[in-house]
Image (tube, rainbow, N blue to C red; front, side, top):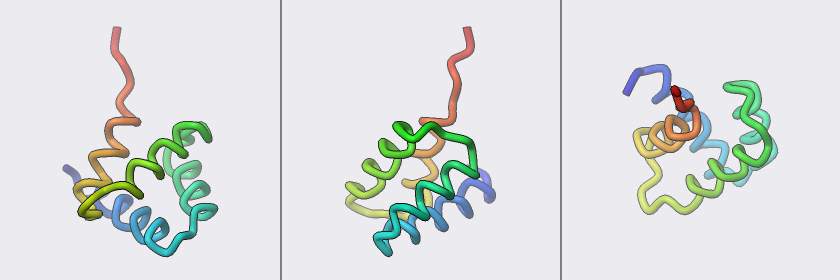
Length: 70
């Protein structure tokens, strides 16, 4: 996992832990232009993590940012 993803993940996890959902949505939107429904899924998954750390958050973001290559 790259240092950039970990940095983004730490910032996003911090926003979510502070219950700042609006800022988390705006951050995701600026970060990767995720559609709102995908933002909701990412935030929902992060909020249900047993151990919310930068690696776990980065993995979730990474899953949604990978495009299918066909």
